[in-house]
Image 1: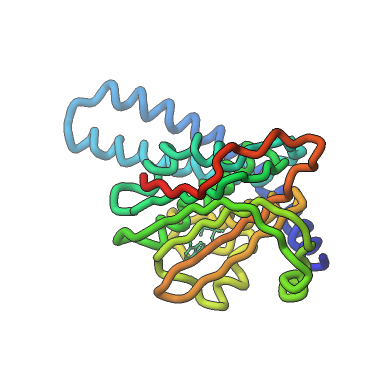
Image 2: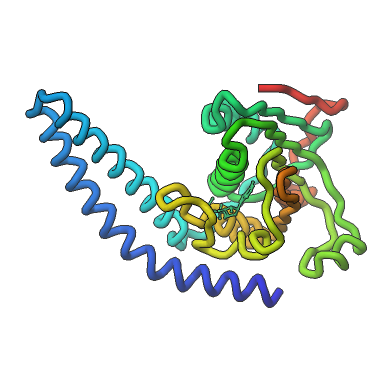
Length: 260
Ligand code: ADP
């Protein structure tokens, strides 16, 4: 509990600070972008057009970064809703597929009779996207990415191993890559806001921190299992929706695995 509170406080402080800066920065980028557009219309020399296009790309990257910072700083309350997790993954698949690129073999494995969970849909989609992007970045030469969705009961033994975990029923979304893996040192810092091992301009260090904050706030847990040169699994444990709000479980009886 202590570590969760410290994390939440840290995130709040940094959020307050970055929110204002990101907002102003976004306005500046909009001015640059508008002027680049005007400039592009007026020049025909190929080399000069190339410079403009490179500037455009840099502005676009800056805009993505500020977008992430704003999302991080936003203090909107979560809006939980009852969700079918396998449906959510299915609906995001084409976007996930394009995000990982051709060199990654993407497989989705869904258990039959899945429970519903009750969390903020937009935040869950963002968390999954962040984890999938991390998996892709860990496999620059391609590899295998598996998304597994299943019902999980965390028992007291597991809770004793991971002291802050509440025993109970969860929907587990596990994202596994066959990438570079993380050292014990990286694992211990990975959920800190702004911790990144990626090159400047590549990582913000906010993906895992945001995913962790969202999952904890929703009453769930996030766990990282990783081994250098073998790969990483990040598990999101999302609380099972209360029985009264639950739709009937999805009708599938046998587990299915699909390659995309
Ligand atoms: P970012 O991806 O912008 O660096 P994150 O908070 O998402 O920020 O991740 C923090 C760090 O954790 C990454 O820089 C990387 O070192 C490590 N990491 C996260 N996911 C993975 C993964 N699937 N495989 C290897 N390392 C990872």
